[in-house]
Length: 100
Image (cartoon, rainbow, N blue to C red; front, side, top):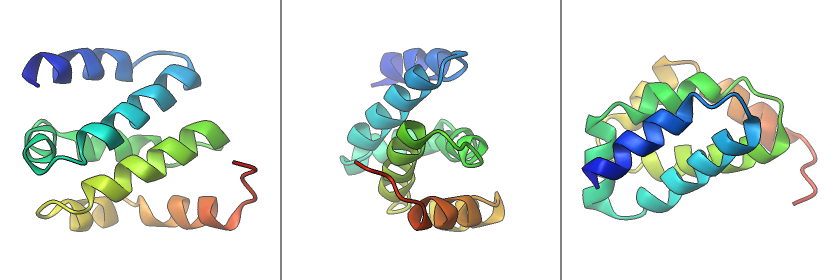
């Protein structure tokens, strides 16, 4: 998993929203396993996800919301997302009409 984390972080900075959405989808899947979630949490996934919260791209928002939901099940991640100001952008997404 550690090698995977390095690849995901390197893709995180991709200039295209579709790649960022794919990274969020991968994180959501990785985080479904508690041990993996612990590892990615220790590697600072919360600030990375929180930084994407203001996006208006629906595909990215969809996968980001899933990744954040999965990551909130570990330790203090919920509190960290709240402190990072991630909640209001998520509420805005939940209020929008996403055709998916």
